[in-house]
Image (tube, rainbow, N blue to C red; front, side, top):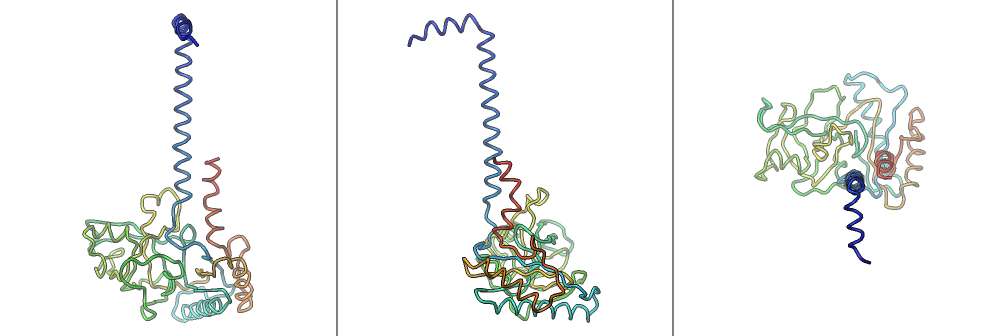
Length: 291
């Protein structure tokens, strides 16, 4: 094919050539922008939570007629209900572990605060999500411990959310430890959570916060495990089932809990869910954007 006649024709129609160039440039800009947006959505949907998701289940329920106050007697009764549930779930076939857990990655109430190196809350300040639970929480989630230890049973507190009691020990995610202690000496150090002291006894590699909202995107993996069972009319649990047995365990857990106390609410849509179901719901809009 000879190019000279084509070039000559293009020279005689400069306006048409310019229009074609502009159309191509605009098309490329749209395509590049689309690929950028799609790439962001894919990265967001595929980002790891830090937990071992295969076999992980969240249970959330509310007791009817449970004490509504935060006095000592009410708190003890609520904690007894929670301990009974945990023991019941732990005895089910194909259940590997169970923990009290106010939240899980991607879902649940988000309790957050600020960690500093002094009680005046000056200098370095790190925003973080607080995961309240017991000594089974870290193993049940499957979050990898990279330094230190798990909580001990005698370190677990229990109280109402309104209590001002503070645990003397915490486990932090590595991003929190690195921001507070760039030199790497976080383990065993004392930090201040909203002005109250606590010693770091363990560091986990990664733990995504319960929220995927944009306002929390700058600290997605800033998490703190708190050795506290929160006692209230609503209680949530993290449960680890044997891989491949999630559906059977979810059915058995519902039946067992209702047998212990039928005066409770566990809605079908969110009362008992595997983390894969939670992930599917949370990122549904992102997958639609991708398409």
